[in-house]
Image 1: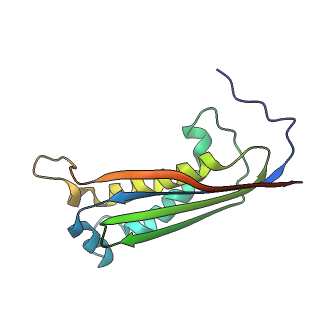
Image 2: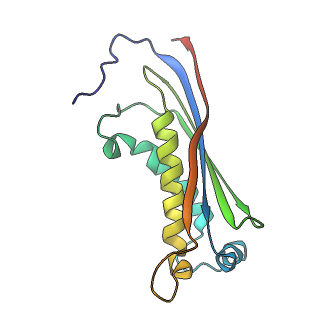
Image 3: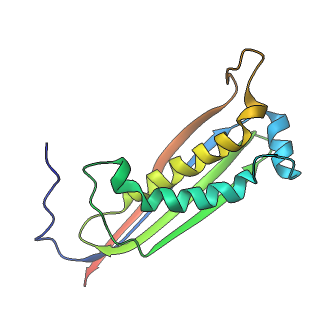
Length: 148
């Protein structure tokens, strides 16, 4: 096992956009929209958690390089009809390696923060989560351009 050597690679502008979704009960989505979640505002928590997730990527993925992230932008939205919340992360850096893992980690962390904030409303009578799931986490775009 080894971390890939990137010492000979040039610094380049790197950008990655990732997104994903969490499906919730209709009642939970309404509580979020009405600001009635006791623990915290899940949408604000997702944004902050996503930024922290992007910055923590090398601690969570041991072979990922510790890079100098220049920007993490989080976008969170509610899709009332489909009973889900979407999260998008855009990560930017001038580095020797890409930022896809940072963007994906930001999305996953944001979605987990939403789940944590609303879990009390999502449990069934047996303490299970039959209607709650995270899916479609993926990289939707990446950019690699120009030497520095």
